[in-house]
Image (cartoon, rainbow, N blue to C red; front, side):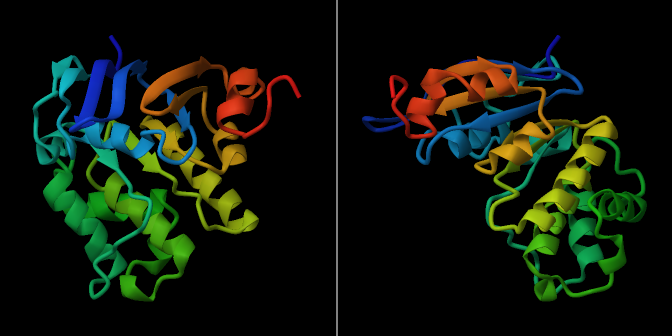
Length: 241
């Protein structure tokens, strides 16, 4: 049984179709990468998985349970954690207090001791040395690490990463990749949307490609990236050129 599966999931706003018959699955322990051009429906897909949006059709299953109409807060407590493209920490609170919020309000699957869970999340995200610093004073890399820590503090079984490497230097991106590898090694499954493709290639087992709300390709990362279809719709090159 897959950890997560989407079957025929669609979402529209009036005549605009933003997710069109999405069908794929994520296995326990897997790291799945998601690529596609801007406007392809990648974040919409995350919103459908996390419960921020309700599907117009199809089924979302998580750990054997139909969560298609389950609210986002309940899905979080069931084990779906996520980060956002732009970090929005509680700037007047410390780094530890930010993580503690995740442990208290999202930690439905394992936060018996919220403080211990928050510290463990900060350590896994590489941010434990900043625990007592105000979140508003963090530079970009540490803000992205705090996004990770807050999601990890909810004790997820599945972690959704939304363009977490964007805006980082090469050195910062390398440090982030190391953290994500450690998270995966801890037993958490990952679905990662990213435009920094080399970061994905360093971590994921499999890639899927979205275009105009549809899943148009999936498979081994190198095979997907070398396909003519991906060069045409994602890399912007002519497959016959």
